[in-house]
Image (cartoon, rainbow over all chains, first blue to last red; front, side, top):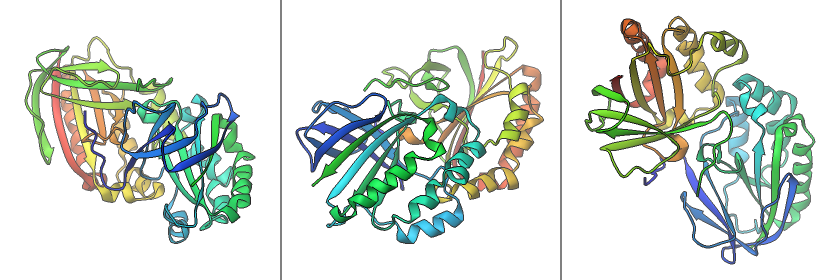
Amino acid sequence: MTPAYRAGMSPATFVAGDLGRWRIEGIRAVIGETLGSASRLDVREGILTPTDGAWSLRAVSGHVRYVERPEKTGLDPISPGLGRPEATRGALIPIRKSDAWWALPQDERRAVFEARSRHIEGSLAYLPRIARRLYHARELGEAFDFLTWFEFAPEHEAAFDELLAFLRSREEWQFVEREVELRLSR
Amino acid sequence: MTPAYRAGMSPATFVAGDLGRWRIEGIRAVIGETLGSASRLDVREGILTPTDGAWSLRAVSGHVRYVERPEKTGLDPISPGLGRPEATRGALIPIRKSDAWWALPQDERRAVFEARSRHIEGSLAYLPRIARRLYHARELGEAFDFLTWFEFAPEHEAAFDELLAFLRSREEWQFVEREVELRLSR
């Protein structure tokens, strides 16, 4: 099998070890078990089986699952790309949601996500300061369902902390059964 | 990497070759390129890299993407399981949708799928005669986005033909850029 991902999809393998562009400033478990410590994080294109590193996570960025047209119209023009020169701080947050979450029909997941938790609306205020890319891992049989990748300038680290506190305080987070936070710099 | 799928997920590898419980009665391209001919289809549990067979397809069955609570309440009690003794006819229909489909936000995909194409409502009349399981393959980097597996008794083959004709006549199918139909018996 040689996976060939189509336009609009970004498969990635995150390898924690001694190599890579990003220095790992800290790894901590927010909910559940943590991940092993390492000094650097290497982000590689493709779904790979690395032979190096302490651990690795695989995931694919692709189409939106909950965003609706009016939200997309609001988000797109102010959502920055990755790799801005000033965005020398980053974070990788792997999350697993519960079986109860995945057993809900689409309308009830959407209601928890946005109508009750304001995931999109509440995040808008942090754009364009914080760049974000969501990767999906559930269909790959990985230990996490999602990985979210964030990039921002050092002066926006407090705003990033505030965004995380907001998301974690909402009803949606009651369905999170594992969450690990990696803080990064380059 | 040893993928470990969680509760409610069914990873499968469909291997076309000389082995397997299902005899392939026919393979035809509905839209776009076909798949190579073979005499039998073997359905194996897990995301595998077979060394036998003419071709193989990998996919994962999991949570619903468009079904809402009232529909789930209608579907669940009349949706039969797989493997009924009388269900000796089957079909495997791999489908790929266009990049334009995947670029739509969730509400617009849902509107095409159900409000305008009546995918769920129009399929209800065929339950419980036709058992169905939807597998997703897009995140695995496969050539198709979905595989749908169907099982039914020989006397319901005409109803199955009618269901396919209904689905293919609707607006949703304008986004299908590749579709292959395998007819099976055991």
